[in-house]
Length: 415
Image 1 (cartoon, rainbow, N blue to C red):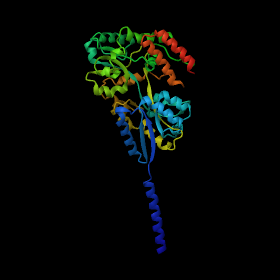
Image 2: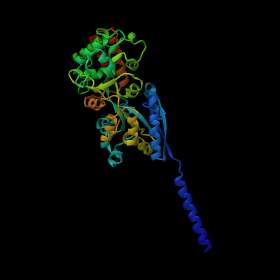
Image 3: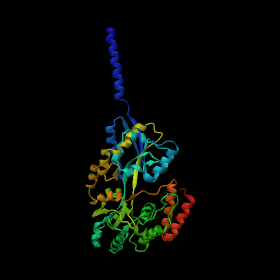
Image 4: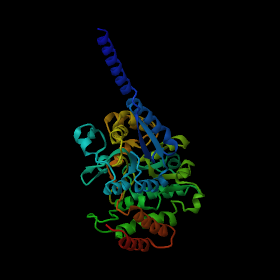
């Protein structure tokens, strides 16, 4: 009997030991690299991490943030060394190259298992992280650009506020009247660079690459007309300030100073403008010409194909992409649009003011176009930007600049 009692005690102790080991097993730590939380929005990602770890006590997330300007160079170096983090952030343009090289985890099994409800996220944002029929990433956030305008300057110039139906002609007319207020006030700011030009070209019925993707069409007549319009706004009507007239100020700073009537910019500027602008301002869908076209930007979450913690990393990217908690944090911070697009999320987003016309954000998405993407993405962008700058500075006519860009692209970039 004593032997049986000892046996039962031994079994009980063994079971207690096993249970204790299970209960107190060390959580798995995953690494997450990103660029979008650099700067003022860093605390928001920290709030997301804390909420995720509360819901998933068996997983810890080690976050590393690198500024956008250095991010992809450092990521490429880590990829070459075989040291990619478990999960990391990619924008749409860079996603394609990592997917092509087979460096990302195939997420199709997760989608087919029903463990992720794809219907809750923006379908366009989801689709851009699908390559060759394989889902390699989940959308984290997406955004667009809109036309911001200073109500006070419009009132002072006796110009009616912009509407979603405005055209290039309407924008130019208003910009000239605001520019006439005084020598230090400007009507408009639009950068002369690839990210602006690809979209302006489409607004005028042009494109940088043919519809079949087999040849560059940079020097088309529509594109020459577009670049002429843009450079004339700087060098002829001067509604857009020249570099010297900026006095060292950044684009956002000029708008916040109250000396700029309109600026085409991303919705990620909301938070800073809410904080720093002491005048009335609002937004509308960006004007078009032959057609409407607006920017589409998307950031995605991917997992390294060689991650040893893929299961845990998957839980993290699912949380960031589709949880109501992460969406609320993002909306409260005016930090781009969350990928989740339920009626509840949209309603809570549009109720926040300023701007009063947040509905224009969603209207703008109706016209959104993704930027051109090729294997030699950065090289292509650099060639185009160099040529556009030569036209902006008056060193070449718009036609000459675009002809030279066309020749360089045909010689150096493989489609």
